[in-house]
Length: 418
Image 1 (cartoon, helix red, strand yellow):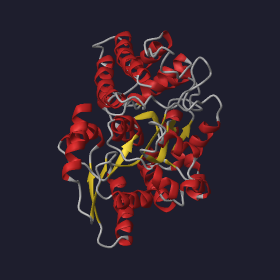
Image 2 (cartoon, rainbow, N blue to C red):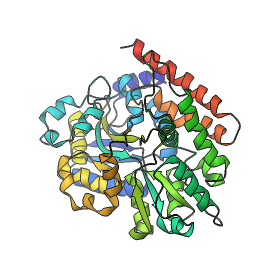
Image 3 (tube, one colour):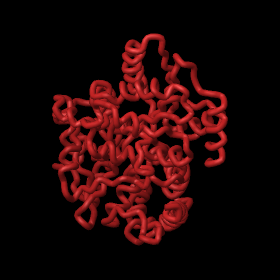
Image 4 (cartoon, one colour):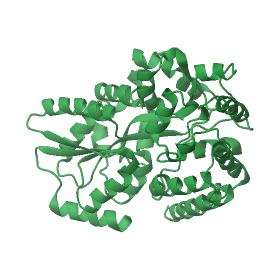
């Protein structure tokens, strides 16, 4: 991958990527609602910059990692791209991203960004190779009607209560406890429940060896596998991605869904707000829970021949007006402190996430996205091996050992390069 990206970078520097009046923008976390909102904000940019056209390329999320890598290898490099946290290290460390530091230094809205936004955007070499547009914090959706029908009076607060509630719901005809994400994007669930069972979200020991195959983490991975094996999640959920798990929840197929605020977009359109709630992720034996917090943002490609214009586009997307408009449709928590005063974010539907953030025993967990190899691990290796474990083709211990071996090599390589 490194050779492929490096070759593509030099090819693009020789050939260029766009005319003076055209910018190419790639979105990778794609949905119809997101694309529509993106086009709306981009239209305002084009209006403010007469003669400029923005070509939007929308890649389906389940195939985005491979498709974007193919684009890069062919020299089809955009000016601006939507950058998931798990890809940042890969592209930044291959010299493909432009530092946004000079632009941030002069931007009028930099001072209004949250501290976390700047910290995470500078995850690689303490340099802003990406400007996050929002945060995705996992919390637990629950279907009030299904719980009542199963004789459950309140949402589960612990992993044991979660299993018990899932068993009761799964006894109802055609119903299941948990909307499991066994396909694309499913790593968060494995990581959250693994850390929660282990009582610790430390991914590595000091010598760089992975904790994935430690006793606590293996118990957590086994816990996830048992949910599926024991019929507490739909059989076809082994292949489910984001759209399938969200649909499984709002159709009433399953009672529980762990997701970020972006799931509210589809759920709020199809369910009455009195029929579901959002609560803190269930806690493990240590009394703690470790919900993952992710982020995504906008990056400028180093090969762009229109960097100042590309920054203007990013500034339009990231400015307070564009950022709030975007996040209201994508469901992420915005990166501007001023957004806290927006009535939209004081509505009851967001209460679950803010309560989770205030809970000292709910520890937000950032996955090791700084590792160059993490993008492949999350979007390819973890999906394949996780499905093998759910289907019983490999044991939980074998799954843990495979993950530990891969991550240990990546972490020790990272430590050696520091």
